[in-house]
Image 1 (cartoon, helix red, strand yellow):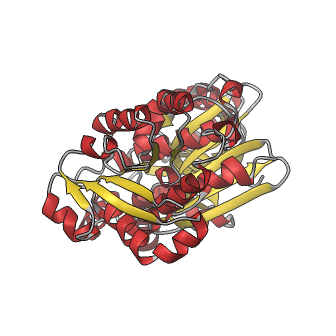
Image 2 (image 1 turned 180 degrees about the vertical axis):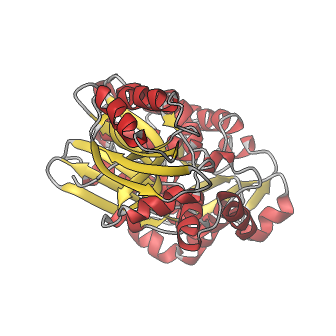
Length: 436
């Protein structure tokens, strides 16, 4: 059969990995796809640097639009990132009748609805396994492997930078600032780490998974984001004393009232497998009504792990290029006319358990005042520890609550902070059992 010609846009770390995998495993890939797959043209502004990564036999251009407009290119691979030029390139590739493989989570979370609609109109495929969890095949699992299930919830550690920082803070007792500096030195964190440590990256990935799991349009704007930059090492230590690990968790759940879509630091029981995912590794826990909880674990970033997912998408597209578009797996698992605009729950309506750390004046009756205010807001206590004096005349109370709505927790916290005996703002973290 005629070889498949690949056009690559963005020859950086991952793009170089894609070229390496395509060349190194060419025979294996051909046997799987049923035809040869070859990298024909690649785009990078620095042509010479691109040539070092992809080899002499590949045409190198500085203008990425030359790739999407090349008449011989069958599949366009977009690894540029961002949602401006990348969007224009992807839409033009689709308009030219070319299939697209992308690792761009931001592009899909913000513009996926338009991109998939255009692809549907043109009868082309947009594959995006690498956009969510690097080398972990979570998109294929959700879209195909679990298609017999009603997905109830998904919880994921889907940002390696944040997971590395939290792991180091727990294991070494170091501060957030010190571990962040170490992560930057090792290349795990960017010079500006905001995208990772404040939850934006995880939010983009969670938005994509929620759309596939529940058959809803992408809606990143409704995703609640809370990062880890304000986490205190004390809370990580106290959580461990109580039998929990703190992870930056992306969680989406379909309830009778609507869909939860949230990213925040979360206490998870230390016995759960996902609580023991450390360093830069990623993991996604998905609960289906028939299969129960399933865990997917692996490298969420890096040149070759991400390239593995990109090339797997290329093989999938190559196999299905001649298939009737109506018989292909839909982009978001559900048929396009079967997507539902389910309501997305505001954070105030989400139900969770809570970890509260309260700094108080060390005197009799303070604990009674706090428990009274919690009770008045319908909140019961599951566990409580009182720590020794931090300074002259002050102490800390750490407590875990049973499940309540966020607005109840917010009201109780505001009331507690108004007490004269409370010396600092209350520290609040959410808790999830993740036991199915």
